[in-house]
Amino acid sequence: MWRWAVAVWAVAVIVGGGFTLWLQDSVKPPGPYRWEQAEATSTPSLPEGWETQCPTPSAGADEDGPVAIACLIVTTR
Image (cartoon, rainbow, N blue to C red):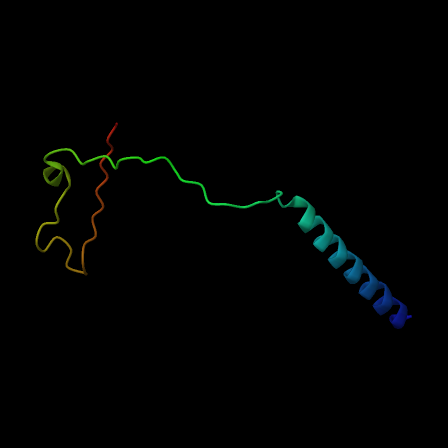
């Protein structure tokens, strides 16, 4: 009985692998593949005085270890 179970399992694995390979190839878009140039965009500049808008850690504020501060500045074009 266990031989039949192993044989059925092996056939299921082989059929599943075949379907996987067959379906994987059918999902890929047709070639030819090539690189495309993106539009040239300029990086927005930071506003003047941005250094003063970000908080600065005060000395001895955290006795347990270093202080990490993140500053987020949102600009519009």
